[in-house]
Image (cartoon, rainbow, N blue to C red):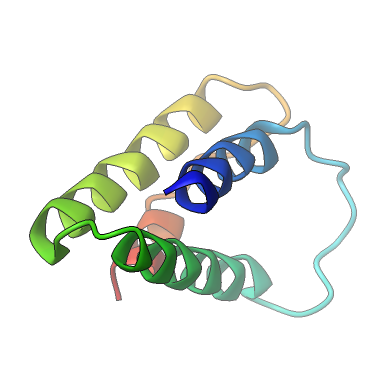
Length: 88
């Protein structure tokens, strides 16, 4: 459970850290990063004993909250496509 909570915390910090403005190494790398990140969160949540439905709903809400917070940040850009990447 500690690893899961730590990963959630790190995810928020990374998602809200000011963007450096560097061009991405390849197109849609952010979608790949989101998908891999949420796959890791899913695995950690399941390993911590969180049941699938609450975990899925919680991660969907977590992703939506991050995108909503990014919309408020001047150096970040909210993208519902990023949120969609975590759902697939």
